Amino acid sequence: MQILRAADIVNMIAQLGTYKAYDYYRKRTKLRITEITKPDGPIKFIRWDSQQSESNATPGGISVNQLGTVASVFSRSPNYPIHFDRLFSGGGNSRSALETLLACTPNFFISYPQKTNPYTGATEDKLKHIMWCPGEAHRIGEIETKEYKQVISEVELDIDFGDIGVTPGMLSAEFDTIEAKKIHTQMQVALIRIGNALDFKTLIAKNDRSIPVENKHLGELEGVIQSLDEVRILYNEDSKKMASFIDCIWFSNDFKYMPAIIEIEHSTGVTSGLTRMLKFKEAIPALTTNYTVVAPNDMRNKVVSEANSTPFRILRTRYMAYSTVRELYGLIQRYKLSNVVQRTFIEPFLENIVEDRL
Image 1: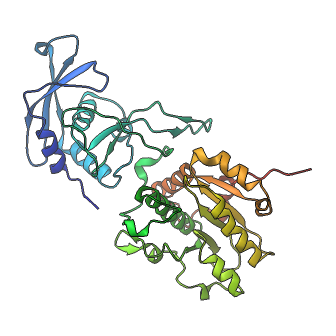
Image 2 (image 1 turned 120 degrees about the vertical axis):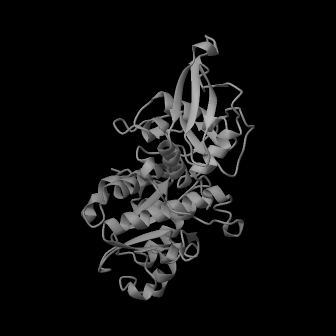
Image 3 (image 1 turned 45 degrees about the vertical axis):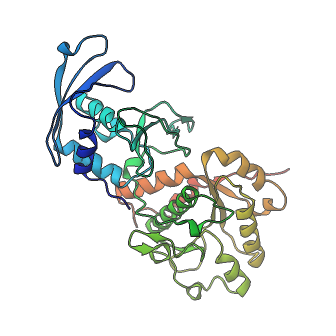
């Protein structure tokens, strides 16, 4: 994973020079760099109203601590929108100046991602965010916007999935881009760690176990079941075979029951995941569990439609949005909830989407 250091940010901003004035994103204010101290800052600037001249400018500064904070947050969240106001607990001249200078460097983009309103559940895209995209670049000195296609939650600053090493050789018809497979793996990482907090053990699909995550493989993370021989509830070979293809299965710590069987879907559709869960149910028809589809927020209607169709109605499928998984994972990271909450904590987050027929 590429690391972003404070010195890197200072060097990128230094390329903007001290002689040219730059517009803020809304073009109501201009600023010019007056002094940069290498390697780690600070940076001094002047700013003035766009309708006035530079002679009316007021001085400002960006501290070493601010530059270090930006480097730390963006380094662990590449290609992810960060709300700068939240990062620095509100607005301010130095915050706005730093955001503008970053956006003028080639690897930073302005974004307006969809966010879930915690009170209404509606999605909104009114708040300006900024993204560090080390694999993409725009012309220096200009500000460009970039679309972020996933709905994000209110706890994004606390989310750290670790360095995930998806390569082209890991792609398939179901996940045909590195971005899609990486998001799929992020969901698996989050579900493993949510499971740990609930004192669950997690089985991960055998095809995904070798994906590098941090300095391990996905199948080596804490809480992941290493062998189906441990799982006596899977009492026949058909059930073991079907289980090995499911994206994520939660087991109680004593392996006496299964709180959820989870398929993670992306833009390609939901039928394949429902089919795998149906085959698993046919292998152990008496099993009581929550068959769950995790999918992007904008795929909910598609999931509901498929889950209510024949033959999938028998699964009584539950739904959990990507944003819900991220939010739960962020809460666990922020508040250190591992082994604190009861296993029934997860139930309200698994939406029952199959209609009862009279």
